[in-house]
Length: 410
Image (tube, rainbow, N blue to C red; front, top):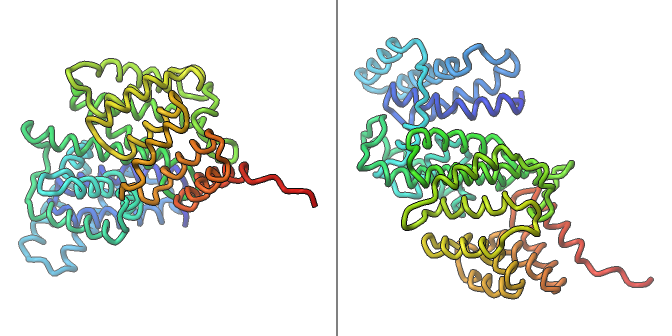
């Protein structure tokens, strides 16, 4: 039976919490994750039919613990290991009330893992993304990502990491990866990489919730506050990004009266409070860019010179082809579409961007502004074929159709 949206949201929120409880209890990360996935699947089948239990978190913990014990026994584990697990179950009949999600975040960013594996494992275990979604975020084949996640679980197990917050000396490096992971989760939620809907609000909400957790732990960290600000300012536009039929509405055409002013106010306050220090961090710069957009009453009021200057700084301290892509858009607003297209040309040889739909889409937009309608139409159609998001496909095909030549006389 298909689960409703509310149940799916609840399961996504509870799954990392339940995984944290089981890992704390049993210490076997990979086996615990398998057990939690089975428990979530069982809930997705039974809850729509039988109703959500009074304590859904406790239900999942109990179901996951039973499945963990079954796994241990079915795999013919050593008697001592089986006995330890059974004793742990007997000693913890009442589900723990604490939320171990934050500890789980840091565990997934264990120093024994490569940065790419840290990010992938956290997206899978904490963010709830599928392997296919993570593969698209990394621009690698799904099979490659599945193997990477499997190896990461095995390394976590062999490293013997304790389920607790890292020492302050190790925390900064792990925090950098944690923030990047949360950033990717939010981006997947704000603009889904595949499927019919433009948004995956559950993922965006979860990213914001987890970032609030980190902010409460480290209230004085400017990059944590800036990432939270960036998410809030960006999410404030969500209601205005789609029309009645779910069609995508670009930033310059959105009804800004539908923007969430409470989120804008909170995000702006966080971004302003984070300003300081000799060198701004990448999230501080991105939050400042988002605040510039959010506080412009009309699209025409956007301070594009400031946006472009911020992107130039960001490009210098954190080089990334997506940053250059965004700078090209800002440059086109200040110096014309041809200047933006010249900057885009530098991305043509970047293998990370080869075939990426956003490169084709931005090029199409700038070509249209420059008056080259045939080239713009072709680029819009290239972009439409390159994305797995149906909402983006429909938008890009519609833009291309507008540029089709008018039919001649019969």
